Image (cartoon, rainbow, N blue to C red; front, side, top):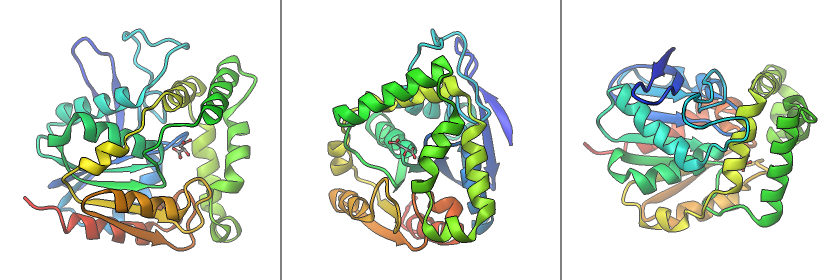
Length: 278
Ligand code: MLT
């Protein structure tokens, strides 16, 4: 684990969890989470893969950049996150195309990365995500949440309270208290300003369905059977939209299969990695 600075005119600085060497696999977390959600997967991969899991700007241990005009009123767009990841891969000297694994908001970022940096992508893993933009009502709810987080009238504890009952499968909620507690603490320890910037970015993201349709790399859509945010049927549709897509459903998992069923999730990722040539 270490911090990478992008240098140059940017003060961007990213906290990154890493393991192994060899073919790069980039894991991008959802909202309002951080890279610790990928840690349970790492033991299931051989050292011949370079597993890279950064905290996105303003989330986890990565700060909001200081000298890029970002203030409390700023927005972390999906394009910015995707640009950050391309610059981070440069800073880490990762030149070969990566397998990009994005969960939920991480999937929105993956699609923007695919649109802008197609040559840097060897395969795509989408978990609990969608290519559609927000409906007006959903975007408005995000703006309210961002305003509350900024004003301090809403805390990430409130966000955790609202999300947790829907976030994890019944099996996790009743039988895996350590995971329930870890997820709560991951949400609550985030920076409210960074979370507000990210949720505003999600509110203004564009539809990327056409990008997925045109992609020429293997795509794995993975969904928790009990995901109430993105039901398995929607993930099946994503797989069907891609030219070379497959769908895997993970039993006894909700919106966070990597922490709820890490071995099953790692297995689905490994199947896709086996299809990556070169
Ligand atoms: C996530 O897990 O990243 C969120 O559910 C994404 C969203 O709010 O659309």
